[in-house]
Length: 260
Ligand SMILES: [Zn+2]
Image (cartoon, rainbow, N blue to C red; front, side):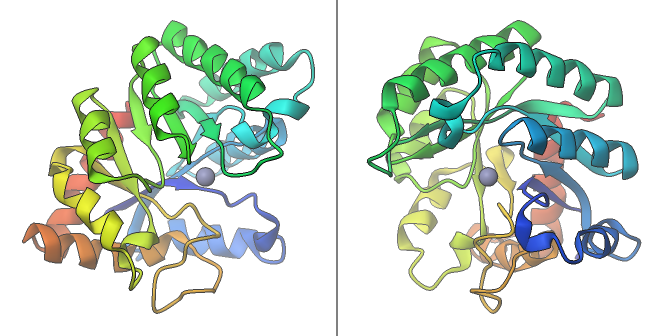
């Protein structure tokens, strides 16, 4: 098995502080099952991390954007900052998307109005720049779909956790669906039902690492090579070989992110 594209990862997470360089060298080095990774930026420093590593590693790509978790604590000049990050990332030739952006209604404490405002402004920004968006949506499926439709956005719903019905609507709108190690969990019935309705040309794989490590690594720090476990699940459900799943999802990811 080879040619895996991890479309969504967070190697800037503290969990990698001890050995980040070693992990990335291994994941992106010769002989790895992984061919490409895309860093999903969550704030200003996180985007700078992505830009720096896009320069360092040939197969490391990056997005820029502000995660809904930070919507209520963004500085007043955050839109200027987004533009600055966009320019810096564009210079690397490896800017993939605006993200991760979206809505998170899981925690009571978050300011939903502010989340919506920040999300909509970033959807507009992506539209102006003709870029796809990487969408984080937690307990907010209907509002997310409504806003994506309103802004005519394109991109990927990452770490898909919704129902088959939500997946179908997102696909009808032209979106890609990103699945993590959750697909390989023992209690993944809902995710597997969603996978059933996702056509192979709209499916992309991701770790969302360092979290969501699939079995047999559950509870451990996740890294891109562990996508191999998810590939096995998809291959079994779709009646394809593991290599076909890698090749197809890698081609999808390149199309999604505009990589030649
Ligand atoms: Zn993420």
